[in-house]
Length: 103
Image (cartoon, rainbow, N blue to C red; front, side, top):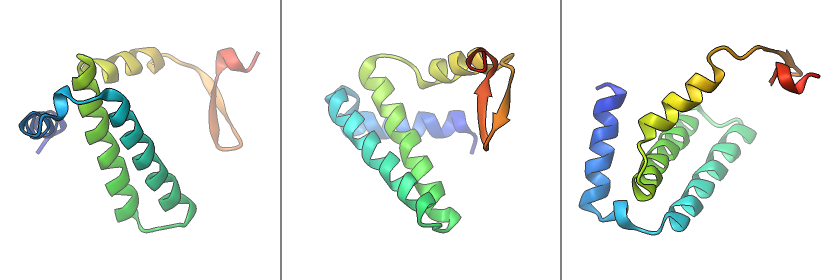
């Protein structure tokens, strides 16, 4: 299954559970919880399966948050890519630093 198909299934799942009209602040708290699980998995050197689960959960939560806010997650991803597409910079201590922050 491709990402578009999976995103569509996530949206249907959320609508079926009335999550699309729930409080976005509570969804943001859920995102923070999932972020914490990802950080803990990485910090503790857990198996890729735990990291994969956390990243997937974050995508589900972000998709639902976007629904609650009346925006498409696809539009967010496209806008983010357009912002970075031509970005230049360099790696410093394992972190990509954009050119404008190097000056």
